Image (cartoon, rainbow, N blue to C red; front, side, top):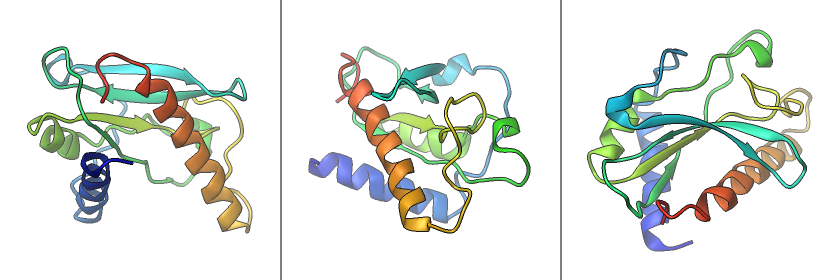
Length: 144
């Protein structure tokens, strides 16, 4: 992992901790944020719903990944996560932002791994899904 990505990941975590990434409304796509939704395939064949926000221009852009919180209720009924305050912060600084949903959450395929008591296994499975999303996005010409 290069230094830019490490810093971006740390900033994303800090933004979430400060409550900057609190918006989660489903809403229509925001064209001013170059927002799109991609169903990204993992090696397992499961597709992960990922909201992508890009700065203006062709890139390549460094990436920030913001993971979503878990709300009460059925995971498959959870709305797509849209951390708009944090997205605006990073877009203004030239970063593209990815907000992948976990398996079984919102429109992502697969089964939600957060159920059960084996937190280490659940977190590892979720991290592997994020790595799969990053592997796919890394092949895109706009991503650094």
